[in-house]
Every structure is written in structure tokens, then in C-alpha cells.
Amino acid sequence: CSAECYNGATIPIPQLAKKTFTVAVEGNIGSGKSSFLHYFDTSNSVEVVPEPVELWKSVRGHNTLELMYKDSERWSLTFQSYVQLTMLQVHTQKQTCPVKMIERSLYSARYCFVENLFRSGLMPSVDHAVLTEWFDWIVPNTKVGVDLFVYLRATPETCLERIRSRQRKEEAGVPLEYLETLHQLHDDWLIHQSQFKPCAPVLVVDADKEFCELKKDFERQRTDILCGYV
Ligand code: DCP
Image (cartoon, rainbow, N blue to C red; front, side, top):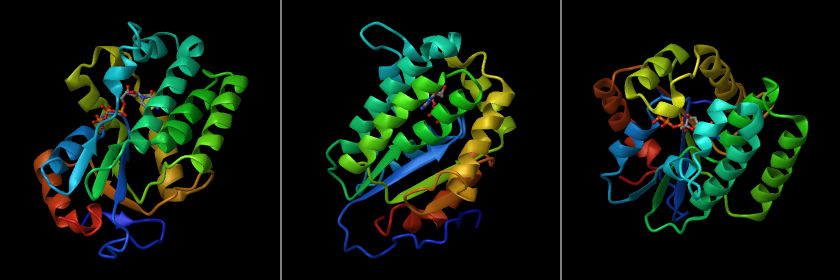
């Protein structure tokens, strides 16, 4: 089995005392989160909430994702503050099924993407500070809890190949180094738990495999991933 729970906590499998669960699906750009969500979208127990990328591409006529890639120093704060708002909306969206499966979370936005922009000098310290103030207020004051992180861990090379083949125009210039740094930040947060700690158990899936192979792993880990629901 290619998945392990890394942070030592028990995955809340059949303790169905808690009626609803939130599973956040994490992983680098191009790691296969959308396919994963699509796969589980067929279960009656699961409601899937995809990442609001379309909203980011059309904020009252502005493509904030494109602006961020074109001129990160100018537009990172604009983009990431809108990501933070839309992810807050995703987290707090009323749950109608026992398992709510969300693509990414407020946490990866803050611990991986914002951190990457800041550390690479593309986001000024003051912008990082303001986003962090928002994040630090949001987490304890709103319902943004997660019960399980599923980390689709793929090598940066695999991610680059998938990004190239899907041809999202905004991502045309994403270099391998960008994916390498993001990969490291995901590992630091979800596996090494060095600077930032995940607020829930982490299930790591080897996402380098072809999708037909991966489907077998998903099936084998279905109970873990769906917290006991099928
Ligand atoms: N993005 C970002 N900052 C965030 C979240 C996302 O810069 N806080 C960017 C990275 C991508 C785009 O938004 O260019 C979509 O990113 P994801 O990796 O979340 O989604 P994908 O569609 O790439 O996921 P996958 O290919 O795994 O399905």
C-alpha cells in the first residue's frame, strides 16, 4: 500500500460519533487533485468542492491568476487575498453529506503558496504580514477545521509534465524550480511538520503513478479516505 499516515495521529476511521468530516486534498500544482476529487464524486456520502480557480480567473472581469503569474511582485497580494476569501467560503459552505471533500485549503494557501512567494522575494514583508494577520484571525474565529489531509505527493517533474499537457494558459511559464520549492513546502508542512503543523492526520498517496494504477490505491484506501463512510 503506497499511503501512510505520517503524523502519528489515528485517522478517524469508523468512529462515526462525529457526523460530518472534512477531507482536504492537497498536493503540488498538477499532482492530480481534480482527478482524485472526480473519482470520489460518485459516492452518495461525499460532496466534492473543487478549488474556485474559475472565480480567480474572473473577479468582476479581472483574471487575478494571470496577473499573479505575469507580475508576481505587483499582484501576489491581490491574488492571494482573493484566494483566502474564496477558500474561506469553501470551508464554511454548508455541508449536506457526511463527507465534504475540498480541493486544497486555507492552510496550503498560507503555508505553501504565500510562504513561497514571500521567501522567494516576490511578496514584500508587509503583504505577507497582512495576509498572516487575516489568516491568524480566521483560523480560531471561523469554522475552517479539517479532519483529514490527503496529500497527493508527486515529483515536481511529473507535475511539470502534467501541467504542460493540460495547457492552462496562465501556467505556460511555470518553471521546474517553482514546483520544486512548492514540493518542499508541502513536504515540510505535511510530512516533516517542521515550521508549520497540519491540524489533522495526513494520508500520503504516491501520486506519480498513472491514474489507472492510482485508482486501485484509492479503492484500497477508500475507508480511510472517507473516514469510514463508503
Ligand atoms: N495557486 C496559487 N496559490 C494558491 C492556490 C493556487 O498560486 N494559494 C495557483 C497554482 C495553479 C492554480 O492556482 O496555477 C491552480 O492550482 P492547484 O494546484 O491548486 O490546482 P490544479 O488544477 O493545478 O490541481 P491538480 O492539477 O492537482 O488537479
